[in-house]
Picture 1 (cartoon, rainbow, N blue to C red):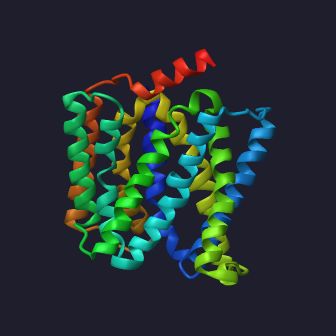
Picture 2: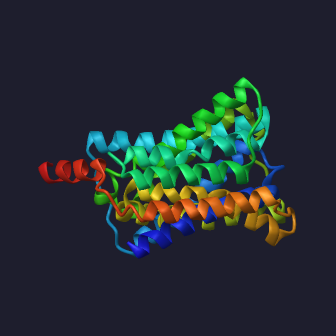
Picture 3: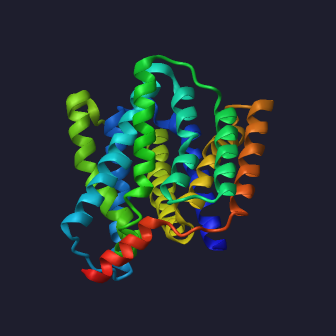
Length: 295
């Protein structure tokens, strides 16, 4: 469980650094940039899969649907919704909505312990405070709610696949499958201009996004998820704004306000409260094991 805690905390903190690093690739076509990011990550993950001798695993129809749902909702739809919500009303609204992820994952884990719900609620409050109470318009809110669905799907659809695929293969399969989907979206919205030669700064930014935020963070999260269950693991999603605040300080692009620091403190307090609830068995992993045994 200790390794699971460290992995989940590290994964969500790294995801939070996206906010600071995204400035390096902000001028690159959005959907083309996402396709490049996942293409590079998929190549790296597939090379690692081969180097570790992990053979290709044939999925059942139901498992293929889980993988398709994870990729379509958890990667492609999530990115589209975050981008469009930010375009419509700025980053604060979508950041605030995504701050509720710990609560939804706690509920997705079955019947959560009261302390887990309390801890998740405190994490949500802290993440919302650290992100800033979002204000915006109806399109921005609808896109933000879509991003929330995508973020929850990223974990929920992964749970029944992890016992069979493991963290490396699941990350490799989902990132590889997302590339043609993102290219299709990019061609519809950006046309032939979705790709161009990146500048040196953009290349470094994409390298960080692909290697650290995709390959490393995906692996850490999918390794921690079956150890902790969605309820406990979801608590650490509150570290996303903490990672963003820390990155802004390190890069010298932002100074945290008192609200930022108070929000970060609430997130940490909520995680501690939630962890005292212990791990309650999640229904989804149990169902996945039964399904695998009967296959």
